[in-house]
Amino acid sequence: MLKVVLWSLVLYAGYCLLLFLAQRHMLFPRYMMPSLIQEERQEIPSLETLWIQTKFGKVEAWFLPPAEQSDNHPAPLVIFAHGNAERIDFCVQEMRQFSHWGIGTLLVEFPGYGRSEGSPSQAGITETFVAAYDLMTRRKDIDASRIILYGRSMGGGAVCSLLKHRRAAALILMSTFTSVRSFASRYLVPTFLVRDPFDNLAAVRTFQGPVLILHGKHDEVIPYAHGKSLYQASPNARFLSYECGHNDCPPDWPQFWEDVRGFLRDAGLLNG
View (spheres, rainbow, N blue to C red):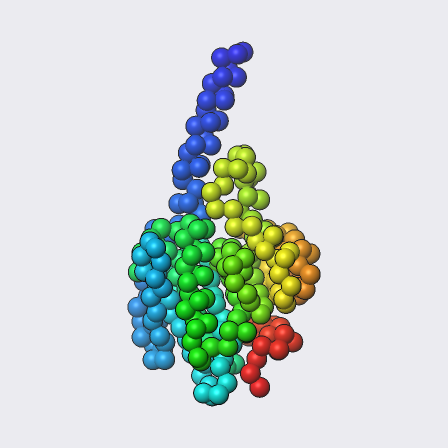
């Protein structure tokens, strides 16, 4: 019996070690994505490519300026972070909607994704987004008092990490989890083995600005309860649920954009 217990402990320790070493490949499956979509960038003449300088190399970002902007009125800015199995190439077309509202949009890549250098981790992503934030808020065409952080899925972790270091006027979280540690029990491992915790719940709890939480009722990747918990933790949140899962959310893009526009209007973040 003692040998059985000892072998069980050895096997479990080996299992935990394997997950500890492999977890970033699971969390950031950058090698499983399809080829880059070069034509998406070419279809937008106004798109500006920026390279964010970090201690581990250069990370790409795309800036979509407002469709119309006055020199005397700097524009609000959305800083967008995509999901863990995406790249900025995949999101640029849908993010163009903000330009029509007079809002600039910065799509920031994750380190090690696409054409960017480095390797993805919470520390590297946070450094990248802080540097991107600082770069944009020094621009005269950007209103630094109207920075909107928008994260989808894993991107919610990126913008919540940024929120711990920089100010924002509003926060939008779509299909976002409470923390990576909350998934440890799914793999039967202790939470202290999580290398990139992304504690979004703590960030939302301390943020006093307006928050929009959007989540699919049938999300099979990040359960609906995560969205509800984020909403309940925020002192100033609006919660919207959709009849969808994770990768098909939102089910109705026109309605989604109306919901987002209403939130930004109520927050006083739209020009005019």
